[in-house]
Length: 471
Image (tube, rainbow, N blue to C red; front, side, top):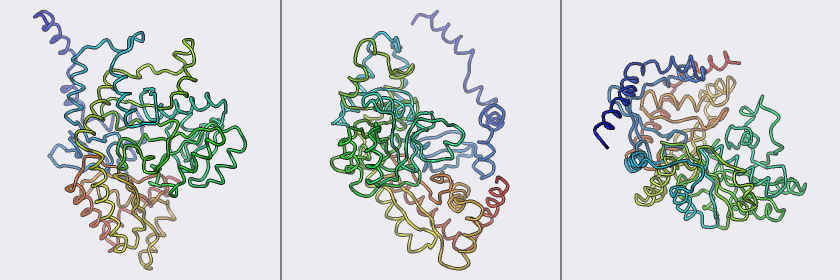
């Protein structure tokens, strides 16, 4: 770079100073959201006391302005699989920006998409080709389109309580009415109870089903079908010339202790697989629809159809570099093995508490995708308090646990779904014994307080008032 070019670059950089902008206006964050974005988000955060100000993040932790650390057991809904700002992913993004590649020309074939596809397919031995988009819902949209086109059939089956995204096609296979209400008409799709092979076969006999889309472990509630159900469903689908689509947007890339969650069941080989979230490294949105060769060749059947399904930013260099770095870290740092060991440690320690706390009904899940379900207590005093919460709104007890975990113990978690008494833990895949100890100790303290009639119930009264006011 010449001296003139360097001076010009410095001058241009001086026109926009990100650090200065954040220093001057960062304190307006909640006001800006209220004024210009979804105004209900800051309202909700204020109501439950989640309106924190985080200044920076690293690994499995956030930090506030006073240097206090907050343990992240949410991982940005699964996006931050490697935690925040992993140095390998960060360096890869610096490198790809500094390389000044001729990206997204539309009329060439850059190496990075091919290299990332090759890496993904190495973990997907029965699949052959990849389409890169920008998100999980976009990966699902691609799978729905591909399945409908290659089968010539209009209808896609999905499971009750499923979540596959919020764009129109993905919303059509969303099992939660709260997300669907007011957005009809949607695609001609039908829900079946997860695990119910008879219901699946009844729909398949109608002859108009293109595919079944399924989360091997449902994010809403952390629910799995009975053992052997997924393989049996696959056999039924193929017998009726329909496809199996595995939505691994949240469960994929090691979350459950295998690269994909469907790999926990022998013989399951989906025709199409959707991934996203953790593939991004937490930096650049990326989604992928992975499928069998014959499906892609039928969709892209001629040069006239070369762009029949495409995405403006799909396969961009930054996203591909992030994905390659993520898969490299997973291999070199034995991330999946860590998920198996740490997940089992966390799940077993929490499960051991079910005999101690009568409102703790079940701990379930695989790897580092764990559901903690609460249920009606036995003792009269606790039963009356439980009934008060349930009468106002189902799910308030789980929220009563989530809030003090953050307020008193600086641990971020989430209620698993609307009207559910389930907390879902999906922490970064790189957590270890230290984080397990911290969470279990904090959870135990909150449950002690809840069973002893402590301050948790004062917040419960606030939640009841808010729930009643919102009716």
